[in-house]
Amino acid sequence: MSDAALNPSTETISAVAPVFTRASIGQIFLEFLIIGATSFGGVVPYLRASLVTKRGWIDDKEFVEMLSISQSLPGLNATNMAIQVGNKLGRALGALAAIIGICLPGAVLMYGVGIVYRIHGDHVWITAALKGVAAAAVGLILSTVVSMSKKSLSGKFDFVFIVLTVIAVNRLHLGVPRTLVAVGLLAILFHRPRKQNNAGEAQ
Image 1 (cartoon, rainbow, N blue to C red):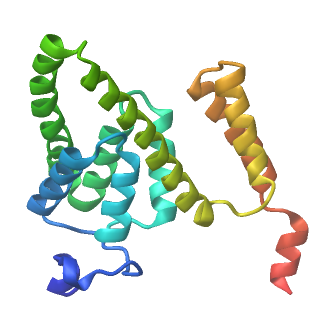
Image 2: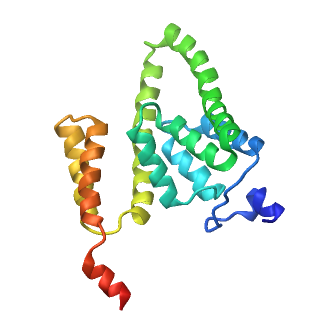
Image 3: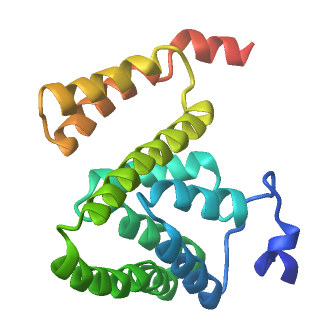
């Protein structure tokens, strides 16, 4: 593998660039540091924009699979994703660099914001700003969902799994792990290889 492939620069990577399997520890730390410092209102859109579109470290299919694993395990999605991507690109040191990079800006900023909020949290402009940011965060997440669904949903019936998940979590108030296991089993049964498909492929 060439040096250019091992150390991709921003200029050499486009939206349709191939997926790179290795990166230096410095690159991993810096990219997740930027994600952690700029991911206001929810980290998922920023993770996809940086890891899939900008860097080409993973593709959309792998992003969805890693996000599913992150959501089904305890802990924050962002840190779980950082560990997975860091481990893929740089093994244990890569995972360590990624998790430090993504957590460091938030820890420093939240410490400062916590001090300010404790002193001025009841101010009318602070309250108004928080409401506006919350609405923007919903928009960012919705934008990512639309982008991911274009490449992740393989058929109309997959929308049934989406509806079932929303109903289970929001209406029936079932836990996310229990919902993921139940819907996942249904999805496995629905998408399982079928004999007629195998016969068609053989022809």
